[in-house]
Image (cartoon, rainbow over all chains, first blue to last red):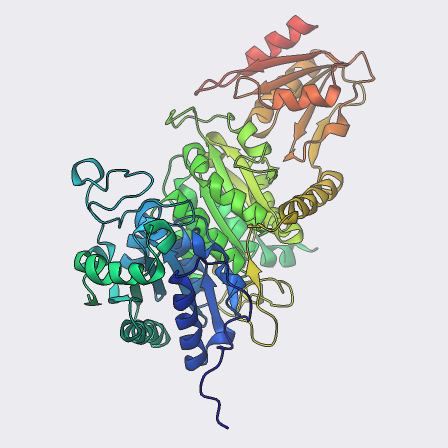
Length: 242
Length: 366
């Protein structure tokens, strides 16, 4: 009998620490599947962020480094410059990439570093228990915006992908979502594109993934997917940005 | 070595302390540098920008000190001999990264050409970052090896030594100089080939055999992970114990100092870096006047050369002289453990204790 579905070689067979309904498990798997498909596991170096995915290297079966909060793209820049023959990617959340690490993000993109960025946008600080993120929606309640995000007090959701698209050093940016099987397949295609770009030395590529966080959103997993569909993607429209 | 051979291998050059550190790093096979401009260390970054790319090495002007130190983290994780440099306020910014480098047990060289503080301070030479340098500086139980050159030749030599020590112990090494050393030009003897080593120079290749822990892709081996994170119960304590074990070995093996007239000295001057040179001038004048004065110049500030102090000899008094209001002073007090008299002379914020002030202070103690 032909085996048509199995665990990717790039993914360890271990229990998950993520909450039920969390998007990280899907995103980790998509990255692992693409790395397998492109046959680059043995030359890939991943950079784990600070955030819920801090132990991403416990799931991925290839070389990985940690990075201080927000500094993943500085670490990745150096690794890629030192070892241009390797495939180097970062996996970062919204707080990591678009708040504490905005400077590193913009400058790595502006230098046109030949890197792949997997950017998980779940509109909240998950690991620390659900504080306001740069991408938190207006009106969204978090533990630091008890009455919902107010544009006058907290500013607007930060569209970092659109900002990055303005930079000439950036080659590819696409926003995808995990809220339905169809969207997951599109996310997988975008991740593949972002890695292929690096293989072809095309330059800086980023995939923003709208990802559910039922625990910090106070919704069940199913409702969380609907919330992305009904609210989040209105603020963060899906599709190719650059 | 005959003259001809010496000329072939070495050359005499007139160079600033900042450039000498850069030159020393190049000859030690430094293949990654990231930095951010700040006075008074700008000659260093400029020298690296000029010579690193020529020999196929990586030079990056980073967007901030934070980015620079984290680039050093990444380069070192990938096996490169990596360095960054800055001056006091910039070094404060790098502390988080240095703590991560220490925790992840990565080799790295960090240069601090100290200026006046606190805050933005000024750009005059100072030695007021001693506490920060020798006590770890960032969060957590860690140390960096700290080396303090007193002249431009020594800046060159210690830059080379720093990379060896960093690799040997997988530890961040800090070169702690002051603005005078950074800016001052002196002739030095340097390796001839170093700055323009050709692209195939073996010193620049990253050997997986030398650094089997480095990230290079997991072909033919289990994946390597570089991290300082240890969440599992007891794991961080184990990591810390491993670090402490390493520090114990370094404390035993890597002490460096210069001692002058310690056999008959009644008053021993204690100073490091540029301050030690001024102290030496005062010492020669006092010696010529028949005074039994000696000098201890710590070269490794951490590990501190504690054993060279003799608290049991009640006749010896120590005079610590610093471009700060008493930081190394505390290490000397710890070394003598209250059993010998320790005096202090210090100025900071641009003030530098002069030869005359030192002589006056010594006469007061005598």
